Image 1 (cartoon, rainbow over the protein chains, first blue to last red):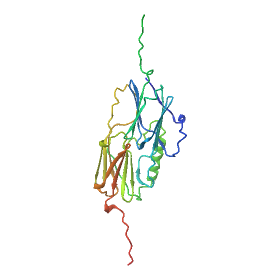
Image 2 (tube, each protein chain N blue to C red; image 1 turned 30 degrees about the vertical axis):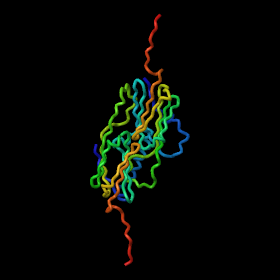
Image 3 (tube, rainbow over the protein chains, first blue to last red; image 1 turned 45 degrees about the vertical axis):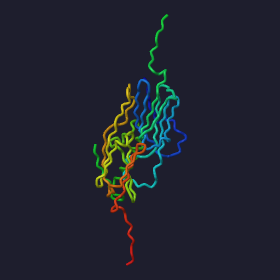
Length: 130
Length: 152
């Protein structure tokens, strides 16, 4: 069993390259664990695929999406959501292999599949006899 | 969940607290975004909408992540726009354990009352990256018209 812990705001390693002063929102996330992988699904609507970055530093996973700046001068009658960047960071309890991590983005939904490394899978060790 | 919200035309009197209400909502959204449970501020309305107006048309934007365009129903009757559909839960397979379940899977329906008539034949809806945009051109009668003042 692995663990995922959300990095609290104070510990968030801020991206020094952030140039936009857009607000940063927290995407809603589902995390599932299967025998072979950890699945992370995040709702990050309104972002172009190219502007999503997924960063894995040791066991700290950062999901970021930079929103496209909305057209200026629009007169809004109703505003129930703000347009800004998405950002969320998790600490994973184990180190995952980097290379097989798969990410896809469709209809504003980011899907990440982190296959468990061989070491993390439940493993039965056969006892050899003479 | 059915929600009827009628929009007041721009510049009309919306009550003394409407500005305050907007500010409170913006603050809540801003502060809420750092909280432990994201999305609580607007969790009771789905999908959240933004509506804008210019001389020619209204534009309605809806955040609908994870919903296929074919699962969204958009209809216009008179001055009323209806948006409905369902976000289906996709079983991730042999899930052993759930670490987090923050996303909601449910049927949704929202009704927006527009301040003026729209040209039904020219309404267009498109979806990109989980954001639905509905373009509703105003009917000729509802468009503002410049009237030249003649010298008598």
